[in-house]
Image (cartoon, rainbow, N blue to C red; front, side, top):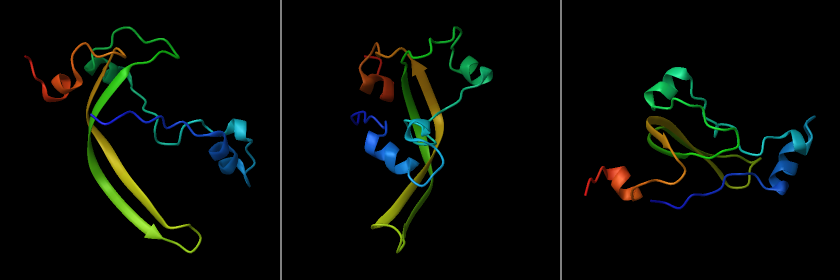
Length: 112
């Protein structure tokens, strides 16, 4: 399984994003737009979540995604190419922060 990468923006990234905008650097979200998931009651029920987790706590999320779009373009205003990948979560598992089985067992449903 690939290593987890922390997507939190650096102080420099926050400052750059707030430049030229009416927002202060402290008003810019710490994580990029699109990385937040919202699970409704029916979603939580499907995932078997009966008790709501504590705000600030952590859970382990594993997902299968479908690539729904890709694009790459070059602009005179940008340095180099701009790339985008659109992902649709198709299958999702949510549980305690530490898996009880080896990750490969969970991903490939190995029982033994």
